[in-house]
Length: 183
Image (cartoon, rainbow, N blue to C red):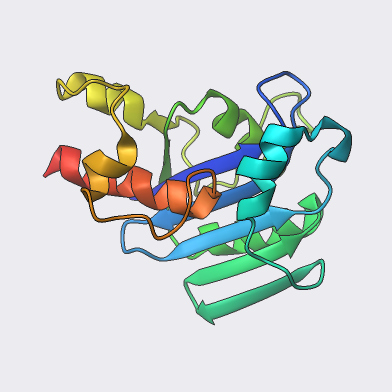
């Protein structure tokens, strides 16, 4: 089973939160990054403007995508468009196990975006395992304080390619932490 490391940015730590962006990276470093255009603007506060919206990187038209090669994709659009492109990208990865960090909101938003609820419960694409894995738990099991600075742990002191709260950067950091923890 292949691993996909992912992170989301969203409009707040509350039940009605909406997805702003999602970033994923697989075991080989191939990536998926999407910015959603239909998040609830009324939930955006100053902190989100400064720390999340200012770190969005796609400035093209809505419902557009760019791919540098078959396995990396950048998408901007509404939830339906992002779902379509994400489903296509995940299918290229075979059977996958999803990994995130403090994943409560990430997993719910991932399911909200991708799952079919027509039978009353979330049905993910058949290649996506229904049990998510949490890097926090792996830190704890390996005897590392789960409150450790992820960037410094996974990447060392000379890092900062992108700011924290960019979903793709955070997914890359999660992968780096995983790789170090299991090495």
